[in-house]
Each structure stands twice: as C-alpha cells, then as structure tokens.
Length: 137
Image (cartoon, rainbow, N blue to C red; front, side, top):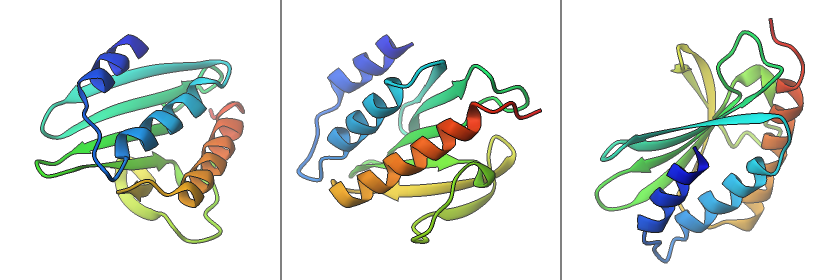
C-alpha cells in the first residue's frame, strides 16, 4: 500500500507552499509507529487519503485520515481524527459532524509549511495512536 503512496508522491510536484513536504513529514511520522495498517484511497480531482488503523482497534476502521485535497489551483491537507481520541488545547481543529466515515471527525487543515503547526499535529498523532492502541469495542 505504501508503494501506491510513493507513486502518488513521485508524480506530485510541490509548490513554494511545501504542502507535499508537509504530507511526507506527517506520513513518515505515522509510518514509523508500530502495529499499524494503512490504506490509500486515490480519488483524482477530489482527494488522496492515507488512512491508518491500529491492529488493536475493534470497532473503528481507522484512527487517522490524512487527506490531500486535490483542488485545481492548489493542494492542501486535512488531517482528521475521532474527537474522543485527541485533545486540541489551542483550538486549531474543526469539528465536522458525521465527517469521518459516518461519525464526527475533528480535522486540522494545513495549507502551507508551518513547523510549529506540524509539531502540534505530531502531538495529535501521538495521542490518537496511543488511544487507538486501546481496544475500542
């Protein structure tokens, strides 16, 4: 599956906003974690979705969706979690009712390289990963 992601990345020409670089950083960050399975859904013209699930999860199909939103003028990222799996102490995310496979999602949008924001997202990834490792039945 990650081969599909690599082919997608090979064809993606990054811009000065460095959205591709941001996606690669976050993808590698989560890919380094143990006991995960990944799925990649390519919908050209709409989005490219990297989905992660912890092997111990029982009732949910994933704990993370990293979408590359494929707009004609620019690509940007939407990183989504279940609200009960993360915190957002700086209120940087947005609740999307029924937006994550029919459940509420909590999403963080990234339109350009921002090291501080990327670190904030890595902390959210760590929280979601830790919570996904607990059995959600």
